[in-house]
Image 1 (cartoon, rainbow, N blue to C red):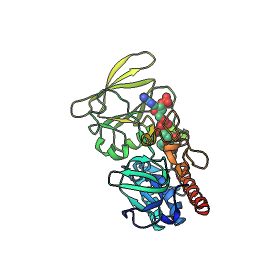
Image 2: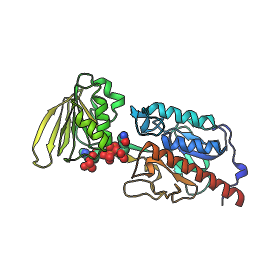
Image 3: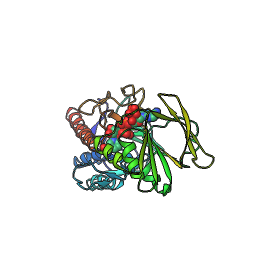
Length: 325
Ligand code: NAP
């Protein structure tokens, strides 16, 4: 073992030579749940928020399947509640983003935009980012009608027609949300069956503003200063056509934000960090939770549970090394 717990302090996160006990990367449901548990174990965890405070859940208008909120809860509201609860027990939250990690020896080194941190345990909850279609026009028209967030951008499409790509829960949930503003929502899916759950499917089928185009992909977004149309291709007939629309909302899955750990931690082919049931990664003292390590469930409730478990394991790890130091 190459660290000494007597060096570990829990002062302000700006102190020189401070070695943190628990550093958490990411402030979504997994990160803030980990923080709550680590804080209640009196480890003064430090959370580096990353670019998106509250993670992807905070961008969701209403979360209806997090237990304890029978009428649903706003995504950003839930994030704020998570943070408040974690801070109440001594969590420190820094608006900073890790840019590099060195995990070859303990304490682990984490470099951010602002400084370097040393920590005895690291909990990775960096989440995932929405996938892009990678088609012509997508990048140029981002923010000009191309979007990955209905909650953020739906308001701009009042009385307009929008197109949604995808057949999963996100496409349907966000498509339904867009009907608040848009006059018509067309969901384009590459197959003839949806991946989304039954409740969302029946809501979407029952909504008079929503219609579907099946077995079809979007191959190009067209427009000068704003989206004017998209090019559609039927994958069964190869028939192509232009479809006039004011907006293109893309919900075709996510990629885990784990590039920084490549070559240091074991990952699967999709880039998800391999973690066992104890949230342990291939490096002792490094734990992973939430979407960065979960190709299966990717729910707020499962991410929160994984975060809590990761923190409990970090506590055990520190206790074990304290007694054997
Ligand atoms: P997802 O379940 O992976 O669905 C992605 C959809 O995009 C699929 O229908 C897929 O088609 C399609 N797709 C993928 N690549 C494509 C491409 N290049 N071109 C066209 N279509 C493409 O992703 P998600 O909907 O974001 O959901 C992610 C996770 O979050 C899931 O576990 C989901 O249950 C969860 N979630 C839950 C809720 C809720 O419970 N209310 C809400 C949002 C998300 P195929 O079907 O043909 O593969």
